[in-house]
Length: 467
Image 1: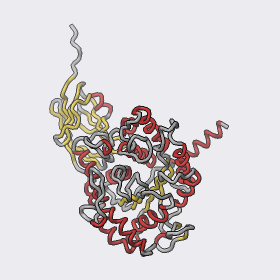
Image 2 (image 1 turned 120 degrees about the horizontal axis):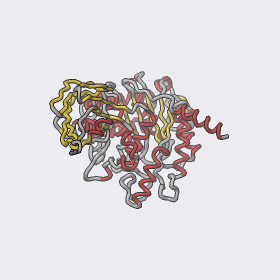
Image 3 (image 1 turned 180 degrees about the vertical axis):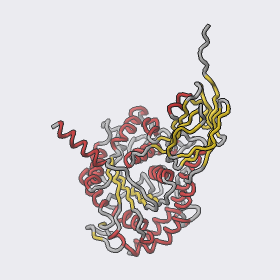
Image 4 (image 1 turned 30 degrees about the vertical axis):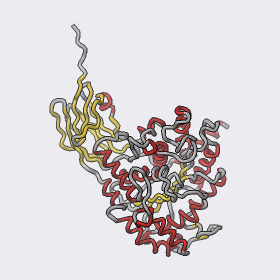
């Protein structure tokens, strides 16, 4: 029996992680979440985080591609809303923009309400895996679609449930209902031949650590002190990284190895080194990275908008992606690292540089400024305030906020299928190309930029003096 279980686990692992999820140029990605994401009720304390962080990963990791990434949330309702509202109403018009033949990707996050069982969650996610060829026209049962939707498949990623609900209610491993719904989501993906990934198990340590270590005062995972329901920035970042770890094994964003003695670049990956110079105990060079790590919220004034505690809750996530500088043959001591004249590390041990200093969690200097600006432009696209995430008015006809409003107006008038795609083409074209709130603006901010590094021995360590 043990032998059979081991074989079954191996087959599950191989099936679930057979290959990384591949993205192509012009891909249109529609994410379907709930009030944890873009919230139709406009709740600023919980919306516009998890998927915005994931969006920043796609924009910065694939700056050579034009990517269109939509974040569709909902407030209240059930999984059926994915078919009667979000999917057919919002997703179809975005995927089918100008009746294109690009890559169409759907991300389905487990809904956080409706109390669905594992089997019910499996069925609900399975229906999504068949879309858009088979989905609701606003009524049930599901009907076969015609026109563009009938001939254009969607590549789905089905993500499971977070363990947030009632972690402190006597279940140290997280809420049982969340665990079983996570299994329903994961199994639906696997059985329908798409990527199904668990979020419950990678995140249990963060949720239980928060509950155990901080008692009634959380570090910001949950809204309020009940340790259930909506999740704040640290937990949202944990979820985003766990999701990304589930879709890719390509965790080396960019790296270079410099030889201090020879003043040369010994090895590079996803970057180009030039203008290397050493003068005394100072090494300088130019570095052009062809991609950068994701971004997240930081704040010194609002703990609910500060995602950095995520790395205290799951320390291993600080190494989830590698964005490194390694320098060999350094004199022992502590070093000052400057990028474009800005000090990003002032007392870095030579041992850290020799091992490969990971800049993934560094939130100072030109690299972070660019990463954070990309996140800011994602918020501009959504038409929410960059800091508070309070959405603007749909009546302003700016960004993604107004997209849903216009689609709902057409939907309420009975517009469906190809007619809905055609009716929304002008609005979606505006989101693709407008200079302020558009995918084009995000793409422009993510483009590679050359930077000058200066690494200086600030405090040498001398060998002990012996008589």
